[in-house]
Length: 307
Length: 292
Image (cartoon, rainbow over all chains, first blue to last red; front, side, top):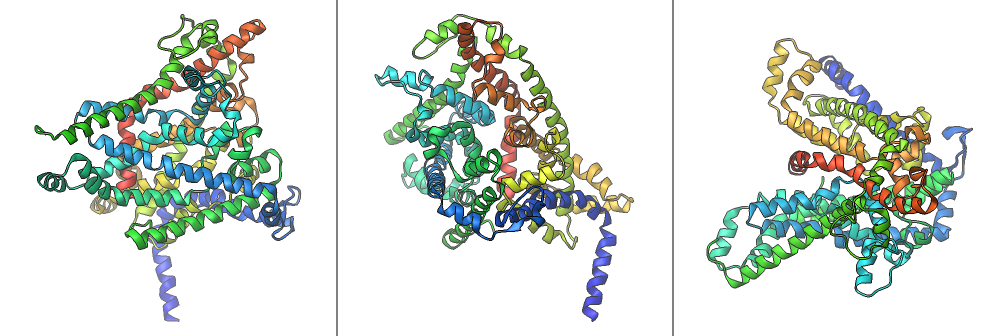
């Protein structure tokens, strides 16, 4: 009894003391409820046959039908494979690129050169995705810049974005081109906190620049790398689908269609709302599981974790 | 750094070479677009190999782009989204960040958990579409503003920065009779200008570059932001409407250069401000990474 009394009193006191704070929080909470928790509730339609006339509550329950349809369909393996492969390639090639760049930039002693490299390499990050994809589309045309380079070397020109086997390399390479400079900033920032005395000591021991880089700089970066890695894992299945939607076409669906682009097409272009929500929900759940797994593993292995 | 071993010298040489190659690989595609946009379309079409300067000189493509009514409407819509969007972003994010940065508020831990959770789990695209439809924002410029009032990541950056402001300032303001609104807008925000500047830049670039949700939520062509107009020209290849008046063959030729001119028109504004933004962004990344 007494306990409940104090809790109530504490609540009242807290409210009276902070009533303006709560007032400020009202729009913020409302925003999160409507636009984040609203869709989470709306994801219920994955278990229903949603009809706009009946609304979310009124539509009929169908249980796991849409999930079964998806798992049983020809698309399931294709989009899953594409999603995983594109993510893995990105993780393998695009993720280390900025780390490497940061290490190289860190070794540059000339301030001016350093600044020029940094300024230019992170310029593409500011160009909009639409424009980037426009440039990619144009350069990979049968007579585009990249093909001209190949023709220069004696190959035949071909519309590269019409070739399913070239989609992933184009995707990953252009990712590197656009993001390497920008993503290196975070590592360069982390490098500044490495103790200079370690280098001093290594130099006295006769370690070369390369060795210093491998044995001092790289380990110093490890905590940052781990955090970035965990964040990346949590988004593994959210591969940049905006870019994929801009770049793919029916000919390349075979290698380019990922879960999110599939959700977009089935849901918004073909109005399979319930089915598409089921696929989206599957995506979100896997993401959450991956994030938690990566975080746990990292905490055990390196003591670095998000929580 | 006076005495260097041979190994170190080779290392330095390789390092500089790699970085120089990277700079060229980053810069050349953009220079190519620049040169191509000023080229005579007929010459460009017949050209094979690299471009080291414009082939001939022509402003035709730029004229077509700037005369295209779609581009004008697009820039106007984007400006609307930018101005009102960033204003909403700042107001909402700073209020949220302020409340969540206060100690002694009973529910803050719960609020914080509920907010951070949304970073890792979402209902998905279709349910979001249904919500936006449900609140009647479909086919309005506000559909690219209201549903994106706060970026949780930015909220966390701002909260961290607000937490760094000494409590004593707040205490003394309270003694002078200030309420929380006054404290936020008269004390906290003026003291946090660097982080606010970073937020403005983050949000503004988002708004400037955003196209996906606009393409999902907006069907009326008169409401298309500039990026959607660009998508039509660059990705769907519909330059025909822009070269009207020219003969079919000329149209095809001009179409090529129009694409490049469009890229320039869309990119030059951001590249012009970018050297000034760069410092702020770098600062923002550091704030976000080291303290967050």
